[in-house]
Length: 129
Picture 1 (cartoon, rainbow, N blue to C red):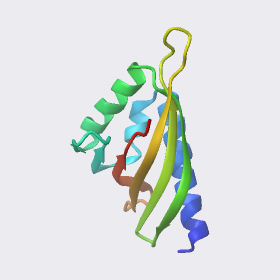
Picture 2 (picture 1 turned 90 degrees about the vertical axis):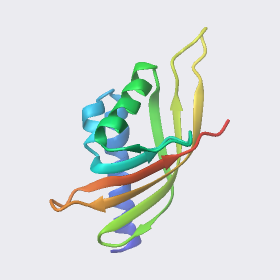
Picture 3 (picture 1 turned 180 degrees about the vertical axis):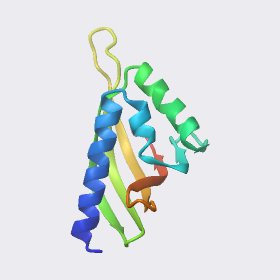
């Protein structure tokens, strides 16, 4: 698979991810993850499976996190497994007239399911001040 094809798949996956998250649709968001996916939000803990991952994203949405974006730094892989390293940014809930902005670096590994859909198998990110 060419790097252009990989980057196109990653960009499509990121668009779907951002649309689901920014609209607060955690059901659609978690459907982008494999059933047995793992996720670490940079806090030293690892979540496993869609239910735990959805609970994390529900908490983010309920706490006003919005306007999430991703900028691909690097992407690669082959016909079965692809990865990305990206910069992420998001805004928090407005407090005292100010809207906080935060971001960091994220890495995700996507595997192609038996029905051809690319699903996140592993997702890790950090936050920078």
